[in-house]
Structure formats: structure tokens, C-alpha cells
Amino acid sequence: MSGRIVVVGASMSGLRAAEQLRAAGWTGTITVVGDEPHMPYNRPPLSKEVLAGKAPFESLAFTPKSAAADVEWRLGTKAVAAGLDERTVTLDDGSTLAYDGLVVATGMRPRRLRCPGPLAGRHTVRTIDDAQALRDDLTRPGVRVVVVGAGFIGCEVAATAVGLGVTEVTVVDPLPLPMVGPLGELLARALLARHEARGVRFALGAQVAGFEGDERVTGVVLADGTVLPADVVVESVGSVANVEWLDGNGLDLSDGVLTDEQLRVGGRPDVVAVGDVARFPNARYDGVPRRVEHWSIPTDTAKHAARTLVARLTGADAEAAPFSPLPTFWSDQHEFRLQSFGAPALGKADVRVLDGDPDGDVLAGYHVDDRLVGVVALGGHKAAMGAARYRTQLMKQPVPTA
Amino acid sequence: MKVVVDMNKCQDHGQCVFAAPDVFSMDDDGRLLFVPDPDDALREEVEEAADVCPLQAIRIED
Image (cartoon, rainbow over all chains, first blue to last red; front, side):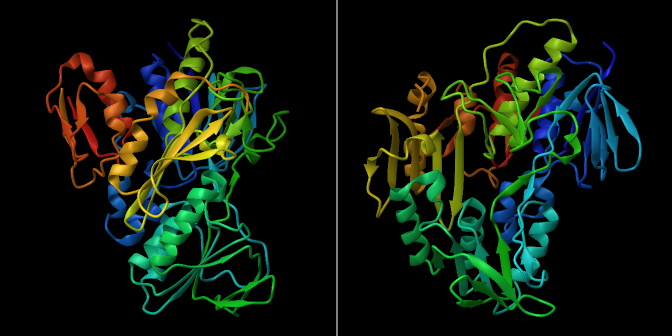
């Protein structure tokens, strides 16, 4: 077998894609292009163990499977354009790679706040370099921290900062509760109470209007005029898909890269997308294409997309069953964990306590038309294991349209 | 096949148990138990378990 598959993106998704291409039987060349200088590494600890200083940065590196030992890595190199009709990718060093198959794995980058004020002292958490810089700032004595955005990363960073001994940590969010998007009201309220009990302050229902300070940030100005003094600001306000390099190919790039149910892009049999940049329909649910930023998605998408692509390139073109992963996520904050299986966000209108109660360990079930579509546990290890007991049930049944 | 788990990294997520139930299990306290030298026929599921470990604590030594 000859030919070349180019994987654009050298994070977890790019690595998993390369490994799964080998597992699917591709023996041709695999070239992985990535803009970070590092080999692929595991990102979840960046807001937790690594930020807390409990795990060294070196411990994050993935160990590539031996089958992927001959993959060609072009690191510190960014793809700047692609010609899907010509089957080429152009890199920022001016070179062009021709491909037989293309895997889009460019992921996301943090969204930044555009309001006025200095940049110094303001952080995002996506890369190893981000986390190192934030840790350096958080461990200065007496710092006051404002976290903008009460999602996964914001809540985790706030908890880690408190754990590091920071006494003033305030989380700002326009919504009335932290993580209310993925969790719904019941658990978001329980989460808020837990954070407050551990010393995290909140400014909810609040918009950021700007930043004070000359060289460095000294405060966060809210829309109502309140100023929160801050030496360190963390912006965790969502992410933006890295898709500009695909412009000009007639693709739907409105939110990531739209794929079909086999993870193919733009109706092209030789282009697939993996990881959080892929906006795919999940046959298990309502068929609405969505991007999913959970950690399990790179592995799930890589496996399916690699089979799709290799089957095409080797002429074994049998149509596979549509992609239908069971979503799962977790989040560690303070000494407790959130653990989810299924699609709770689809069932937020009908949330029931399945076990425990919101003041202690609690397991919540999310329903559509009286049917369980997802569970989330909040609490200690036992609660998380309780969620796992529903996994088989959630695996079994596809859910009717929400 | 030899399976090594870095117990300093393991945080008892249990994802490996779903992927490779013949090799990994949880005791009553939710702590990980595993077969260190499983049959080679189980390689595919052990590789899956290593992939889905959130802490990347599982290593397969050939």
C-alpha cells in the first residue's frame, strides 16, 4: 500500500487518528502536522494536578502505540491552507504536502475577551505553556484571582487556586449558576454551594465590561460598574474552532467542521474530521450535528474516522454503521468529582434525583419523554461509581428525537 | 502481554473496567484490581482500556 495520509493537528486527536489509521490497516505514509512544538500530551491535568504542582509537566506526554512508531511528525508547523480538489495542504514554512487522505484534527483555541484593558496578567488554559504561565502567577504570594467563565475550566481553575492557598478567588459569569449549561439547575445549584463553602466567591448574572490597569491588569470592571480587584485573570469563556486553514473549499465551517454520520467532511470520501473540531450527528440521539469537547471524543472519533478513511483508500468501501458514541465527561473540583454518562444536556427539562441528595453525594437522572438519556453524579468516589451503574442502560437504547 | 498500571496516577475513574472487563475490575471500595499478565487474545481490549484511561496510567509492555 502506498500513498500518504496527512493528519492536521498533533494533539490527542491527531495522535489517536494516526494510531487508529494503523489499527485499521493503513501501511502507507502518515504525516502529522501540529503548531505546538510538543509531542501530543494530555490536557485535563492542566487545570488541576499540573496547575496545583502535584504532577510535573513531563508526566502529561502520551506514549504513542508502537504501531505508530513510523509516523512522521511535523511539529512547530502550522497548516495555513488546503486545496481539497487538488489534495494539498500548505504549511506556514511555505511547503506543500500532497495527500491521498486527509484527517482534520486542528481542535479549538480559547476565545478571548475583547473588552478594553491591558493583556498582561490575563491567562487562558489550553496548552502546557498556558498552564505553566498561570501557575507562575498563581503561586505569587497574596494574589487576587478573578476567573471569567463558570464552565468546566473556570470551575476547575477556581478550585485549584483555592487549593493553592489563594484567599481571594472570584468567578464571574453572565448565567445565574456555574456549569448550568451541561448540568441544569439542580446540580448547578449544588455545585455553587460546594464552591462557596470552600471559599470561592461568585459574581453571577454579571458581564465583564473591561480591565483596569496600565501595564498589567489590576481589576476587572463589570457592566454595572463594580470593580473586582485582580492581579491574575483567567479567561475561560469558551473556544473557537481552528478551521481558517480550510477556508475556500466550500465547507460548512460555521461551528467547527460539519461532518456526515461517518465523520466525512463536505461529502468528500477522502477527508474526515476528528476531535472537538468535528461537528457530527450522533445516531444515538437526535441526529443534530454538534461539536463535543469531552475528553473521550478524540479516541471515539479517531477510531470511526480511521476506519471510514482506510476502507475508502483500500477499496474496501463497505458502509459502516453510523457513528454513535456514548458521551461521558468528568470534572474534578476541590475534593469532589462530577461524573456523567449519556447526554444530560438533552434532558435538562426533566431532572430527577436517582440517589442521595443535593446537599451530599447525589446522582441525578436526565430524561426525555420519561426515558433516561443521561446521568450525572456529584460527590465522592462512591457517587461517581453510582453513575457508572447506569452506563449499560444508557448504552442499550437509542433515544427518540428530543 | 504484560500490563502495568501507574497507581500514583490512577484516580479510580473505572473507564478501563468498561473497556476490558476481563482484565480490570473494581473492588467493593472502588479501588482498581487488574490481571498483570493477561492472555494475548485480550490485547485489543487492553489497548482500548489504555486509550480511555483519563490519567493515561495504563501501559502495555509487549
